[in-house]
Image 1 (spheres, rainbow, N blue to C red):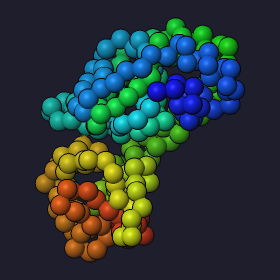
Image 2: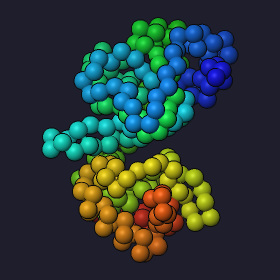
Image 3: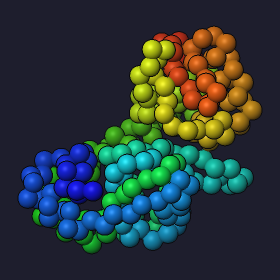
Length: 229
C-alpha cells in the first residue's frame, strides 16, 4: 500500500504537503492485526501512537466487577494511544481490534520530533483531543442524568452518525456489536439493553436484521428519549 496517499487522508496530518508527508512516511511502521487481536493492554508502557488505515479498534477497560466497559470504537482515519505517548505514562485503557485491521505505528520519539518540525500536527492533535473530551463529558452527563432508555437511544444515535451506512430504511450501524457490547457502552446490563431494544423495535424506531445489524429508522424519536431526563 502507498503510505503517502494514505497519510494524506488522516486528519492528524492535515496541512502537510507531499514532501512533509513523505518524511512522515519514512518514520511510520505498518502493522496488520486479525479480528480480536489485542494491540496493547491497560498499564502497558506508552511507546507508540497508532493510526487506523482500515478496520476498527475498540478502546475498553475492565470494571471492578470484571465486566468489559467499552469507551469508544474507532475507525479508519482515527488515531489512538496518544495520551501515554504525550506524557510518557502507562496506557490508560486497552485496545482490541473489532475486525481485521491495518495500522500505522509512530514511536514516541518520532512523534515528538515530527511535532517539533511540523507544529501543525500538534495543533491537529489538540483539536482531536478537545473533541474527544467534549464527547466524554457528554457521555458522562448522559450516564448521570438519563435512564437506560435515554442512554441506549443516545448511543444508537452516536453509532449511527460515526459508523452508519445510509439505507432506504435509515442509517444502518455497520459495527458488529452484540447486546453485551452495547450494554458495555451504556453502562447497564445486557438484559436491560435487550428490553430497551425490543421496545424501540416495537415502536418502529429501529430495525434489527438476522445478522443483528441495527438500523436507526426514526432518529427524532430516539432524540426525544434523550430529552427525558
